[in-house]
Amino acid sequence: MATYLCPQDGTRADTTSLTWCCPVCRGPWDLDFEPDAPLSVNALAGRVNSLWRYEEVLPLSSPTTSLGEGRTPLVPLTDTVSAKLDFLMPTLSFKDRGAVMLAELARRLSPGRVVADSSGNAGTAVAAYCARARLPCTVYVPEGTSPKKTEQIRAHGARLEIVPGDREATALAARAAADSPGTFYASHVFNPYFLHGTKTYVYEMWEDLGGRLPDAIAVPVGNGTLLLGAALATAELLAQGLIDTRPALIAVQAEAVSPLATAFHQGADGLPDPPDRAAPAPTLAEGIAIPRPPRARQILAAVRESGGTFLTVTEDQIRTAQRDLAARGFYVETTGVACWAAVGDRTDRSVVVPLCGAGLKTGLAP
Image: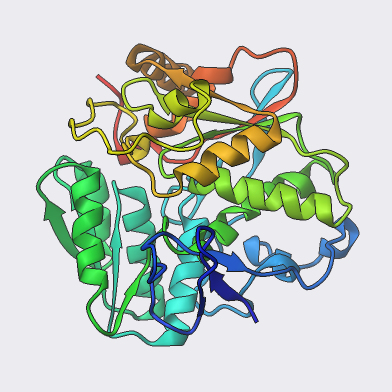
């Protein structure tokens, strides 16, 4: 039986509770969970064509809330760089991988309501999967969120709360609501079930590459949910003897909002304390414009342990990358092109980048 575990102080909680954070330090949970058995590439033939095909390594099984998420194509862009097309998910972003896990867990716990906070894509995903699970849902988003994303949240029947201020103010508002009795906080940051959903991104890559992984995996990083999921998957695959070495994790941030990249290159283990209260600079990569990610220490440690690094991209590089991908046939939102902007010209080793949100979410950058 999986249990919640605080990585800071060792506090534990039952996963059947609605305790959304460590009651001692108020930090995010990890999940104390071991896969049931090793996977085999040959054993996957004939299984359900969704992320649930990797049932041995998932903390939930036999879902009723699935929308067929996962199994997105892996397509070469250059001789060394390939793209995984996660913008082809049911709600048009990679966040479906984690949202289905949260909604399935919530369905089993039968809360009075579900709340979530998001810069857009996680909110649309949670709204969709809560609709599938017949759960009442409220999504908090910052003012200035893409109108197409807020439209999608409302379309799925969720109540939308637009919060004045930035992404941090939105998270604080949602966490205050999450403390209400009978509330399930579908947090893609605090709830580790989300990370066990995003790790399937790497399991799919491993399967499609015939039981191996590329030299490096590039991921855009705001709250780090895809990066930490990738770190989970590579650690599990190594422990199961299914890969010989872990690929380097290349974390990409917008230069305008790059607290983790700054900390990494300064050799810091976490973000400075007390925090900088200045409002973050605007960036086209709204999905990764996170000034103080709660899992900062874990993100920095995961990149270092993999032998990876942090890269940053400018607003002009984001604009150029979005148009370049569109010219190649891929219409991707501005956050989702950050990795291509950062590593598209790499020729020294094989790299996979995620195209993790559809261009219809934000439109073409001006």
